[in-house]
Length: 445
Image 1: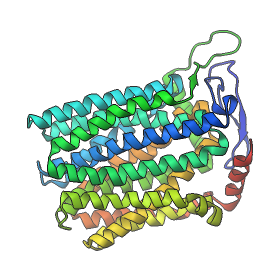
Image 2: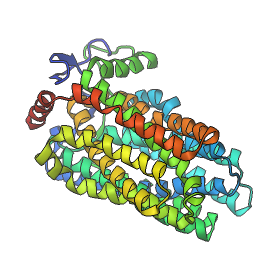
Image 3: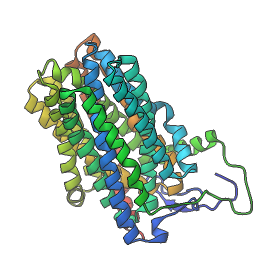
């Protein structure tokens, strides 16, 4: 923290003590500016932005692995496509988190969008000229992955700046619903259909989507001001020091630390599923590209269902159980293809996994936005997403190796077991008393 900067304190359910939150004058938050009209407008803008960009990402994430299946039959090489898209979370998230806390977050989202447009255009040109190959797909996937880290971390950090506390659970539910319906349902379904027509059609659709997202954020009510130190100029903390602040904030809090451990297991399972299913579905299960798009779309249907029932589920069972049930649903998603090649069984399990994923996502974001100050959201969000998304390429790599050495069902079964083992440690930490403390914080103005 810059010496002399203003700090705020808030209680944390996990530790029972107060923690300095850091400088609070980096942005003018919507709570200080406008808690009614601006908050509603910003929620609508964020949902619209999330819808368009995730639709394009959904098409891209289904198109690239399916293109790879036409170039090789190696599970490990095809898993490499999923790894290239998600590996930047592991390699760059911490440094990008510092950037998000230093720079105008909306401009960073535009920067990410520019990268997506350039890479999407390059992929389209290479596809038209029949020059696509695995090394090119890996390189472009890595560039898109970096853009996703920038956009995802920046957009998540924007929420507490532009949406009032009272509206954040609703905003998170709408954003998570838009993410799942587009990234896991409409996008994959359309991507599967377009790849069936031609690779160029699928890549062209993503390029159009990336171009459209640039204009949406203009409507956001958001005024950024660089953090200033009281009492004169002071040297900015080093990048390493600020990364340490983000890591320290996470590891000082027992609940946040355990949530990070749980999301690491969950993220590795999702990475394994997406790495193995393209070849497994179009091979052992006998699905076409369009059928595989529908299978992945079941995740999105479940995600939409989760976003619709999350408020009701929280009221009936509590936020704690809404999150912990996701462990069992994700385990079912992994176990089904290990036990059966029936498309309906695997599809139903995917639907349940998608629903559980949204219940988890909405609630974990609300927990983070409650416990973490806005000026720390970039660094903390990057650290947390490092575990959530950085575990994806690890899961994809391990799953690919297990499938290469043994079989895809064996790999799926191993991840299902690992997922279920995460339940008891989380249940011991995320107790009813901790949940009550969180609810009290959410009721504060």
